[in-house]
Image (cartoon, rainbow, N blue to C red; front, side, top):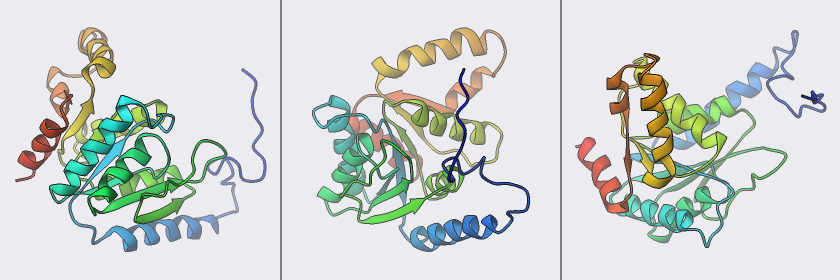
Length: 221
């Protein structure tokens, strides 16, 4: 595989070199801004999914519906602040005057802030952004997506599995999309004893928007 050379700070983690400890102040600044901005948003859910989902997609419409239902139930909605599912969720929350949070990440492609977040933040470092997703969420809602969505899903599952995070609902939206992954986890990871059968209880797969919201509300009573 051809290696790509990082230039002009394109890869923030690789760009952190010995002797550049001043960058820690930039990292601290992002943490401070995030905490100061979000500390009083109230109960919220983080919704994840593909930035490539188009407005005419069933996933886009479902994300919009789920977010609006959560906002009506008194939950803020936190997304990655970009397009696709993120846009749909921010749009759904904003449409019913709910708290609509967009945690945007500066990327060389794909990620442009959507216009529906009424609270917005910009991050340079993924790990700081991920802390904000998990710190203020009472649930993780995982709508079909790609590697970034899988990253958020499995990080939350791992934190709960290792008791670094108190249990919270992790809901995979869409049996058809996620069913194959769940089957593989059962057939390979459990069969080969890479995880325990009880680890499957950390997440669930649901399809109906109202059932999804009800599951989170009931869990947090």
